[in-house]
Length: 124
Image (spheres, rainbow, N blue to C red):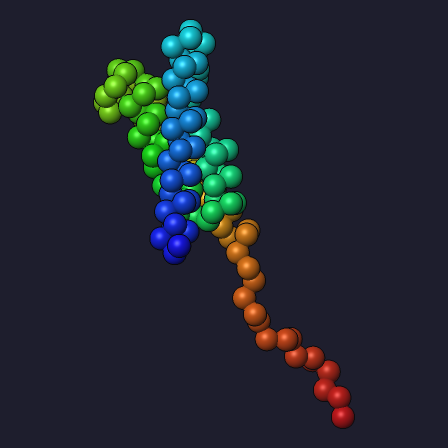
């Protein structure tokens, strides 16, 4: 049962990346001109950070970068990206996803139990 709790977020994050990749790949081959398709992965990685924490979201972001380079940018089915601007897209996506996951993790972190503040006014 403990292994299932660790494997489930990883499985869900990879499934989300696969689903988004299939939709974007279909739109690319249907003739719709997608500009900067890698940024469509930001919302799923943010939702994974909210639901499961930072590690599955970082896995989602790194898998999304690899899937976008392989399936969505020319030349297709190769990790070589022909256009240097698209390499910049992938790099900025990775940076933005890392910042988003870190900020989401900090916003959702439980506050530590701090000691009660002491009064400045001493009562006699």
